[in-house]
Amino acid sequence: MAAERVNESERRRWNDDRWTTAWPERERLTNTVTPHLLQALALQPGERVLDIGCGGGGLTIAAAEAVGPNGAVVGADLSAALLDLATQRAAAAGASNVSFVVVDAQTDQFPGAPFDVAASQFGVMFFDEPVTAFANIRAHLRPAARLVFVCWQPVDRNPWHSSGALRRFLPPTPPPAAGKSVVGPFAFGDVAQTTAILHDAGFTEIRSEMQETTVDAPMSAVFDDWQLDFLGVPPAQHAEARAAVQDHVDRFRIGPDLYRYPLAYIVIEASNPE
Image (cartoon, rainbow, N blue to C red; front, side, top):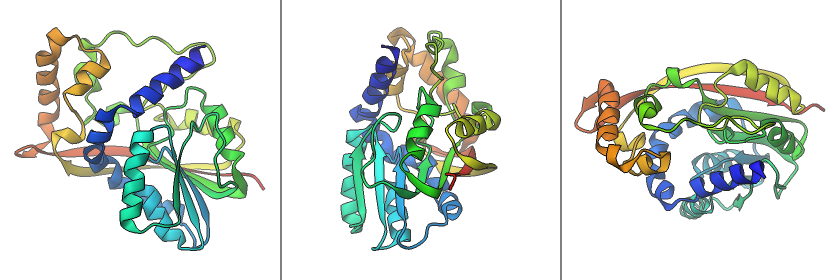
């Protein structure tokens, strides 16, 4: 089945050891928005929180501190490798009110429900059936619970991404199967479409806020050579593709292997009806 192929592809991607190794560098970008996301979440002591696509657990651990010892946070992700990293970090932080679980948010049950809050920091853009996924998430929330997540604005608002530089080296992307949606980091860049998805999943009081910031980080925060194989760049073109990416990011250079990347993201909030 097409759905199984898509899900299996995502599991392979997020369980690749190279992602785990690279993740602390990737977080240089994503963690930049954590303070703003926490402000939007407005977590209260004692609340139960579901962190969707929690990755290395940075937001999960910060949320656990906000809800205090009488609250609890469940970090959910497809990647067993990244959850191992998150578990180690939680132990080092003494976050005893945190747990992590390997699940597919599109289809699986979340332990610890019902939750007062569902949150995500760039972790919800990889559902090939997003309405189904958000309906499943909503089913694990209390009445009047809130959903708050951040996602990227469109790729042309995030020129740090290497897709533009690599496009000529990549094979054409096949269209999604019937009934499926495009997945990827910029899948929710269209606010109107994302609002419609959440509405169809049963959420109400949907609102969005466009935000921009910058982050100073090395090139490894946005690109590694192994991505060329992963993306399907032919080996004979690796050197040329690598040079194209370097040229692409050089506009952001502020020092030796230091770049100031512009980030454009969206904070989306919604409510589960009472």
